Length: 287
Ligand code: COA
Ligand code: MG
Image (cartoon, rainbow, N blue to C red; front, side, top):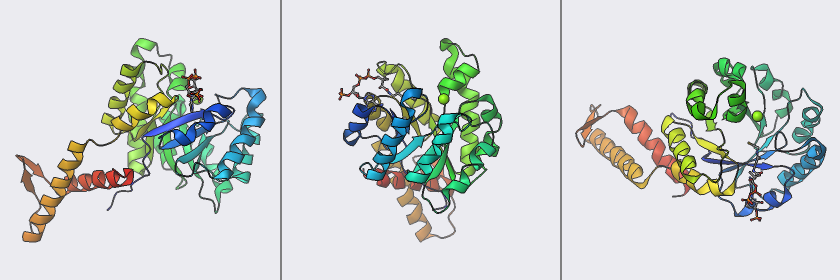
C-alpha cells in the first residue's frame, strides 16, 4: 500500500483539563481521540491545576485506546512557558500547538521530542497560518495533523454568522491541500451550537465530503453522529471490495490489463488503490 493510513481521527473531543467531571466520563465515550485542553477552555487561575491533572491522567495510561493529545498554551505567555512540563513529565500521543503562524512555531518544539513517541499537531487559526499552510505542513516529520481553529479564524476574518462557513472555505481548502501534499491528517473545527443536531450533521457531511479526516467536538452528544458521518457506509465498503476483487481477478487472468469496467464505469489502478484504502480503514475501525 503506497498510501499512509492514519489512525482513525473521525471524532476528536475537546475536554477542558480542569473539568474533572467531564474527564471522568471519557472511559464511556467512543471518541477516536481526545484533546485535553489547557488553553482557551481553562481560566488562568486553574491552569496549574489542570496541567497537573493532565500529567497524572496521561501517565495513568487509562485512556490508551484513544489517541491522547494535549493542547498547550502559546509559549509567548507565562502559561505556555510552564506547559513545557507536559513534554518533560508525560508522553501523550501529541501536543497541539495553538496560534501557529509559521513553521518556526512548530520547529521550536521538535528538540523536546527526541526519543519520544509524542507528535506535533498544529492549530490552524490565524490568517498567517493559512498563507503559510504548505510551509508549515512540510516542516517536520514530527508534525502529523492540522486542526482547523474555526472560532479564532472567524474572529480574525471578521466573518458574520450568516456567511461563516462560506467565509472559512478558502482557509479549509488551503489547509486540506497542504495536508494531502504532505500526508498529514486534517480535522475540522468545532460546531458551537451543540444542541442543533441537524446543523451538526450537515457540517459533518460537508467536511467528510471535502476529504477531511474528522471533526473536533465539544460535547459527548456529537460523537455518534460524527463517527457515523466520517465512516464509510456499508454500501461504499461493498463497492470497494467488489472493485478490488474484480481488478485482482482481471489482472490474474491477464497481467496486461490496466483498465476494467464495472457497472458501466472504467476502473483504473488508482481507483483500486483508493478502494483498498477504504477497506483497510474499515479494518482499522473493527467493523
Ligand atoms: N467531554 C466529556 N464530557 C463532557 C463534555 C466533554 N467535552 N462536555 C460535557 N460533558 C459531560 C458533562 O460533564 C455531563 O456529565 P454528567 O452526565 O455526568 O453530568 C454530560 O456530559 C452532559 O453535559 P451537559 O450538561 O449537556 O453540558 P454542560 O452544559 O455541562 O457543558 C459545555 C457544555 C459546552 C460547556 C461543555 O460541553 C464543554 O466544556 N465542552 C468543551 C469545551 C471546550 O473544550 N472548548 C475548547 C475548544 S473549542
Ligand atoms: Mg483558538
